[in-house]
Image (tube, one colour):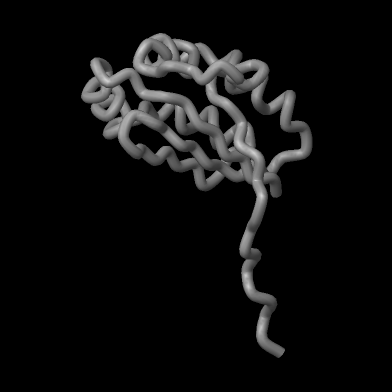
Length: 113
């Protein structure tokens, strides 16, 4: 399993629009994420900064991300959400969100013996 954390800015004038969209994420968008082995996807907000986290459980990350990008419903979703976002200067390859480097992780406790 691979953990992915990313960030992007939220355009203040589009804040309510973005939040409204995420109160009712389209089932097809969620299905595309699940089909691409994405699990435990969360987006957090602080001020005008969005922070996303998900876990990838597949074998071919590039192919699964390409499948998401090729999904027609996801592409329509991005037409609505992208104008609400303001990428950082170092936006990731293949997307507007910037990848964050993991510097520490508290793993699950080993099972008691």
